[in-house]
Image 1 (cartoon, rainbow, N blue to C red):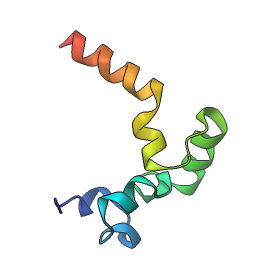
Image 2: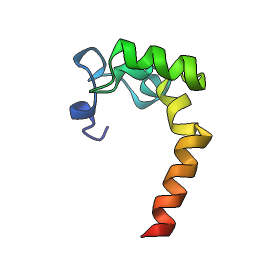
Image 3: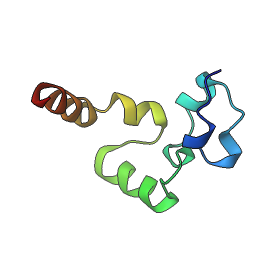
Length: 68
């Protein structure tokens, strides 16, 4: 597994990618439980997978890619 531990909270550092994808979004370093609540309320984002697959995230990535 690639070293993604620096991007994760301690409790998730040894998890497999399949587990990480379905982990709560606050498993990501720097995303608090409060942030996770706001993401869920605003965009129905509950997991890392939800965040990655969010149409808003994908739109933002496309805009930045086209801008570069």
